[in-house]
Image (cartoon, rainbow, N blue to C red):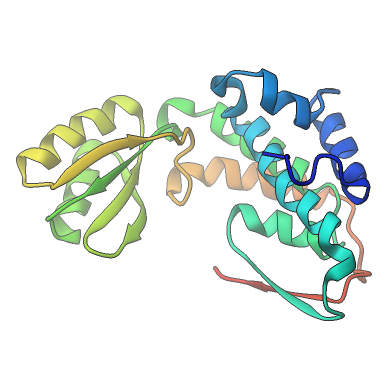
Length: 212
């Protein structure tokens, strides 16, 4: 994961900060030694993903044009702020906030299957209402990603196949993001972010665009 940036001197500060956030565990060593169950833990995974992007940005900053543009979406929001030099600690704030929200209601938030269907959106919405799940992502060609508890998703998958779904599979995601099930986590993250130090004037000349 860090094979291209792990030895970059410019990225050392990123790894030092990530090590502190991970309880003095160096992320470069963590990804080589820990099982997937540990790496896919919500807080650990978010810090690792943020560290990958921020270390790449740090290593490449010397070749960036004087003015550049970044787009940010979901996980990329915190990363985008870090790349722009606005907030160094927002990645940990997000991971702590999301961790607090999802761990407190894990039976409702964890798990997302990818369902490729021949069903209409209305049919998928009805399935979600019936099984207390939610649509997380809508892709082309009637492909949906749903979020909910594992038991509810398993039952929904059986019903979807009976209704004519072309393909149903569970994907390796442990948090049902993009759904109302993350409402508690979003509130926790907002509270953490409000107490995160930021810079009013970023030193970078990177322009940041956000898609809601």
